[in-house]
Length: 76
Image (cartoon, rainbow, N blue to C red; front, side):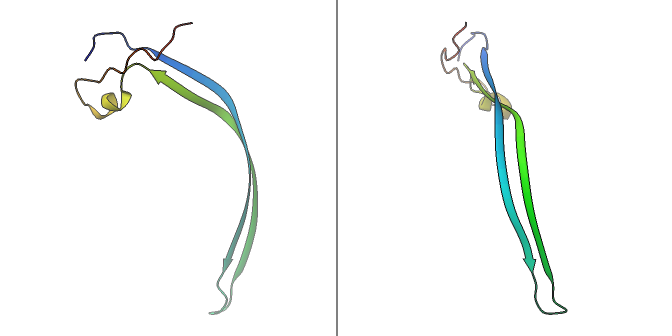
């Protein structure tokens, strides 16, 4: 348990991913069926990681006292 201030350091970076997916749905019989699909996606967005000096899981779950994890935040 600590009365130290909460510090959060966030590292925001760009994120990019390309994905190709193949879809099909065979149901041959009972009047037959056949479907095909190809999907090409390009995803671009921000990616972030945050570091802090308190256990935010305890905070989110309402656990008290919130555990102090030390000084993992290094001010610039």
